[in-house]
Length: 576
Image (cartoon, rainbow, N blue to C red; front, side, top):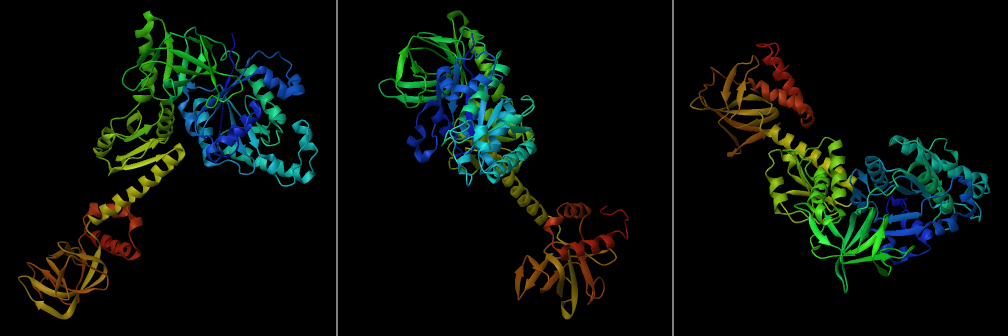
């Protein structure tokens, strides 16, 4: 038995994903959404009969017999929930339609969707939407290619220019692509189909391409392999008159009333029994339609489940039916699937959280691709344990929590959250870079700072016990307690105190004239007026300065060169 392919629509917000689906199911769901943007994940079953009515004569171009019963389309709020649609071994979707506004091109959320499709190895085609907004475009009631050919030459060139700009960007991202009618090998190139969800141009071609790919490449994947039902929790909802319900996408097997089901969980699997099965009608959005009570459903389908003990169920978790004798075995299988994502952590690293298991997996993989260490990864909102774990990290660059699609609590620990994975990673990288610079600047402050001073004539306040003299800071920073040496590398004195205008200070910068006290020194013996003295910088400190050279100014670099030359009089390899 062949099930209908599960197709998800992904792409940048407001590029027209829901509008494409509205045309296919002949609805106007997008008009009911807040701001015209999909607010939550949903599914729509589209039977073959509806697809045939849209594609009409175009379907004849596919010479093979159509065996798939239709499509199960999944619409997601932008990019976020797509990552939550995980099943064992990959993504829940068999195919994806990546919707790109042809006039705006590839945006950050488009890149994220592409990376996740690549990660899960989900085959996809690209709908280049909003061709009707190309200046001068004239709508024609004909096949897409004829519509394009009937446009003025400059409009055809403009369409090609925009299309091949996207081809170039896709090439940079590691994908070959071409306009759907120019493709020679669908295994090597991604099909680009220019469309308008507003005028419906190109949408029949989009569906025909989708059907052709399903029939040619997905026959084995679409065979129902299991009698037991296997699915993924899309959402957990409170329904009036019913209570807590689960919106589930069933991708394999059959599910019946009173079936025992096992649901994955972070701690231990949840066991329950189906009380009520509610099925949406074909061509209706699962969020808004009226459900009909049914005794049994078959993959692939979106179904609402009512059952006891489901209050703590987390979206994105796997669900599977089983017989009484197989309960323990199924629990182990389900938890193995969950643990494959959860336990891939390191002894040291950052803490990450996500709203669903699939989201967590996507975030984990993208972070590990960049060689970031992950100490703790789990589903759900950030809690006290997460904050404590992040706070105990010895490496300050790891004292952070990254959260995908979850609330950001108040905390002294740095927390970065977003519903865009790429933004989380970009913000994290920026934070780490800023933090590194702060740490490096702090390290420099702990080093012996370079300085060069001159003993001023006429300002010998005390010859010894301690010697107190006037000095000008020629360069760098003079600090308390540093050792000073002469131009031969001999250590002369240690700075006990520094005074400016009769007040003690800890340091004096270039240009300042100050009184300096040197214990154990006598003026006329160890030091004299006009003497030039330098900070006695340890070799390890000098090597650190070389490492953090970007934080030094030109004067400081010059003094360090002078100090190195002096030191190398005694040791040729000093500081090398």
